[in-house]
Amino acid sequence: MKRFSLFLSYAFCIVAFLVFLGMSIALPIVGIARIATVPGATANAWIVYVLSYAILALVLFADVCLTLLIDSILRDRFFAERSVRLLMNISWAAILAGFLAVPLFFLFIREALFISFIALFLGVVLRVVADVIRKANEIKEENDATI
Image (cartoon, rainbow, N blue to C red; front, side, top):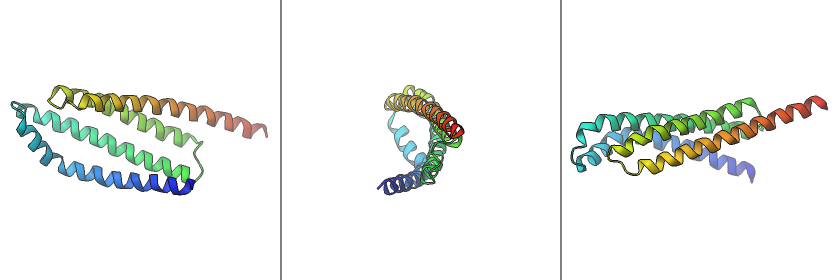
């Protein structure tokens, strides 16, 4: 059952990667329609596009790191420095995406503040989890050395 759950997570990451790639293609089309409905927003349209693509790039990076982390779990190499590094990369991507979403709130996208808060919270939680795994890895190496 554990392997099936990991396989589903792995498949979800692959599908999410493809969806995010599709979003990067559809962003100008949806953005033009959204910006056209807000009066005076066309002057700041380039800022919205730059921030949106930067956030999308961070999400793609985090998705790749998550796929590599699931691959490590499937190979039973979870308590390793690589897993901690991947979790830290995901947390940094979430924190950066959270900070990049804040200006979008002031540029006519009201949902961006909520998304920013969620991304920052996720980044902090993943940072704590990475530190816990790092400490567990140290304890595991200590135990392996004493036996």
